[in-house]
Amino acid sequence: MALYVYAIVAENHPASVEGLSGVGSEPAPVRVLSSGRVRAVVSAVSEEIRPKRRDLLIHQEVQERLMKGGPVLPLQFGYTAPDESTVEEVLRRDADSYLADLERLEGCVEYHVRASQEEEKLLRRILRETPEAQELNERIRSGEEDPQLPLALGQLVAAQVSERQEALASGLIEALVPFAREHRVRQPSGDDLLNLSLLVPDDRKQDFLTAQANLAQEIEDDVELRISGPLPPYSFVQ
Image (cartoon, rainbow, N blue to C red; front, top):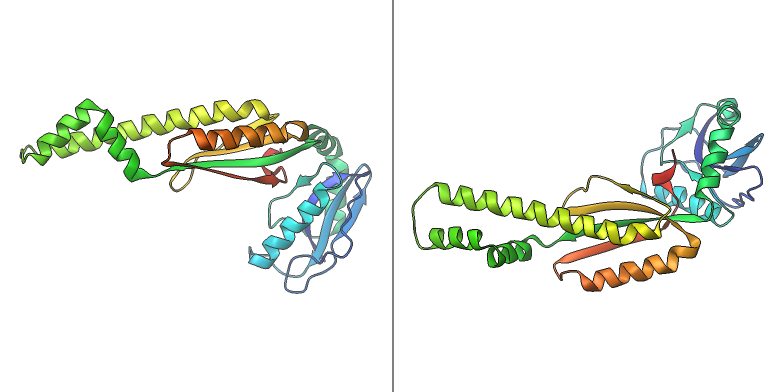
């Protein structure tokens, strides 16, 4: 039977998953599959697993339970293997790599930081603080009919938005990265200007949270800083 694989842990990890039911429409018990120096946390499945709310919550609950017992290599939602022997073979083959990653992640959790900016307030600030934008805007508002004016203003404002948001994102990264053992910067999505993952050691966690709270108070009131965590270190599993 196919197995849904939640995570990989070292052989000495307690892997306390008793009482947990796994993903799928017919949930099977979450259990541990051992092979030498590493173990996989799995449950049997008989169907393709889709990202339904219950299954997403179960996946996360298993990760959080495992995090309490030591370092864990969390797999992304939806990973399945055809049978036990396939999982055991992978565990034996890649044990050295898994153990190296577990050692690297020990004593750390992931925090995810996103930032967005209220566009209307930013545009008003650009018009207020940029003489060239002020001039173009006044010429348009006065009724000047040059068709190039709106285009020039739009290009200028767009360049200013990009420049200011890149500078803001860089400043936030520079302020937060010193608290992390590793970090990942990814392309922001939607209205966000920052998408940052940080691997924060336990002994720096409070310093990091304090720094983040201070930043949230210091930045412009049109900037929203959002933090998620502590999380399993999904972004740092190689």
